[in-house]
Image (cartoon, rainbow, N blue to C red):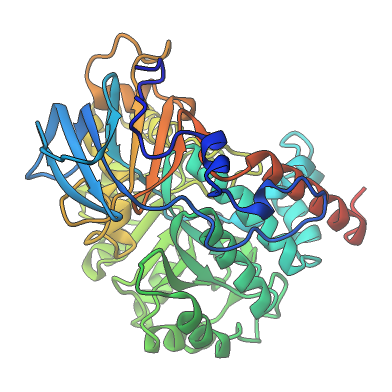
Length: 477
Ligand SMILES: [Zn+2]
C-alpha cells in the first residue's frame, strides 16, 4: 500500500501512467505557449471503483453516516453506500483515514474574472474588484473568457467543489458564452451557466435574449453536466447600480423570456428595495436565486419564504460589506440558503473557509442565539446547494442512483489529526489541501491532491499569457 492511501488496483494511476496509456489530451500535454482551447472529450474515463473503509458522510438522511463504510461507483453513478459493499472486479480506492462525502455545491461565482487576480490589490482603491473588472471586462475576447473560466473551475475542483454556478455577467457575444461553457465542459466540472449581458450594456437595452434558446439547445445535454439559466442586472438601483440597474419593465422582458424557456434566474441584491419591488410586480418565484443576503427587512424575509426564493451567501465577501448577515433569521423563516464563492480575485475558493466564515460571523453577531450544528453547515455547502440549483435528484448526497460527485478528505494531515467529530473538523479545521480525491460524474479528476489528466501548469501559463495581451488592449498600467 502506498503512503497516499491508494493501492495499485486503482483505476487511474497518475499522470504518468495516463500519459503512457494515451489517455492524456495532446493539446493539454503540449508545451506550446500559444493559448489554445483544450480539446473536448479528453477527460478521464468513467469506470467502476469502490472507496473502501472511509468515514462516509452521505448527507443522505436515510443512509446517515458510516464511520467505516464503502461507496461503490459504476459508469458515473453511485451504485451502493454501505458498511461493506460486495463489488467484485471493481477497482479499489483505500479510504482509510479519509472522509468520503459529496463534492461541494457552489451557487454563485464569476469565473470570467478569475484570471484578473494578478491585477488586484485590496489595499489600493484603484485596483480592487470593481475598477479592475470594469476596465478590463469590456475588452474581453472569447479566449479571455475561456482562459479565465478554465482557471476558475480548475481551482474549484482543487478545493473539492464539484458543481459551480457560473455567474457570467460579461457575455459580450454568443462566442463568449460558448467559450465559458466550453471551459466548464473541458475541465469536467458540473454546473449551471448563468447567461448574462455584456458589461456596460445600456440599461434600456435587453440582453441577447435570442441566443438563450440556441445556447440551451447546444449545451444543455442529457448528461446533466451543464445546465443553463440567466443572471440578471440589478433591479431598481439595488447595490448602487453596479453591473447595471434595470427597471421592472426590462426585468419582465428578460425574465419572461427566460421563464418561457424554462430557465432559472439569479440576481444580486442586498438591503431593502429590490425584493419589495419584485414582490410587488409578482416576479418572485422558486426559480430565483438571490445573492448576498444582507440587511433584509422582516417583510423581505417573509416574502422570500412565501415564494420559495433561494438565497446564496458568499460569507467571505459579505464579511467585508456593510449590512448584517442574517443566516439565523433566514433559516428560522425557512428561506432556502446555499453557499458561494463569488469570485477568486481577492478571495479564495476555500469552501471550508466559507463554512467557517458563515459560522463565525453569525456567531459573533448573535452568540448563543445562533444555534446551528456543524452538520447543518456542511449540508448548506452540499445538499442545499444542489436543491437550490434544482439538482438534488442527481447530486448533493451519496445516494445510490445519484451521479457520483464525491470527494475524499485526508484526516491524517497535521491540521486535521487527531480527528474528533468529522463535521466539526470540516467546518473548523479543514483546508483545500486536505482534499485528496475529487470525482465528478464518476470521473476521477484529482487524486493524491493532483489533477489526473489536466495539465494545471499549462492552464496557469496560458491564462497568464492571455492576460498579458488583455492588459495591452485595456491599457492597464
Ligand atoms: Zn456576485
